[in-house]
Image (cartoon, rainbow, N blue to C red; front, side):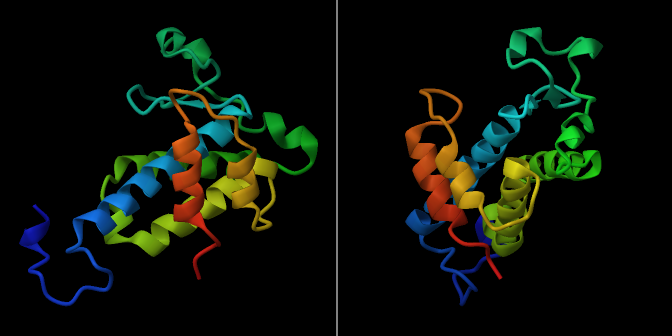
Length: 162
């Protein structure tokens, strides 16, 4: 599929190296999982398989009825930091990037910026360049966000791309 557009000529990044491309893909996926995990610490649970995608219960088996839809976008506003618009924007970025399986290859810098900024703001409500701290603070488990995910996300995000 990629060879339709990429003929093996000069590329902005080495897309013809399968190991390089796979490392980017795994880092991208792990960063998406990190963003979902940060939102989960705020009581916002992402389910990419079930619209409207954001729920107030973590168990997918309980998600679906209207009373489980996450609608309290201003609930964290009491902290004086979060706004509903910003929090909903972070959630939208997660949904957008999760739906674009090739973002790590086709628009890598933009995807990284969106992920970095979204993780940064979801963590503490402020864009203060602490996405790495946010990822580092996440608990890991054997399923949704593993220790390997944490390592890959930190490597992929790094510092905020310019």
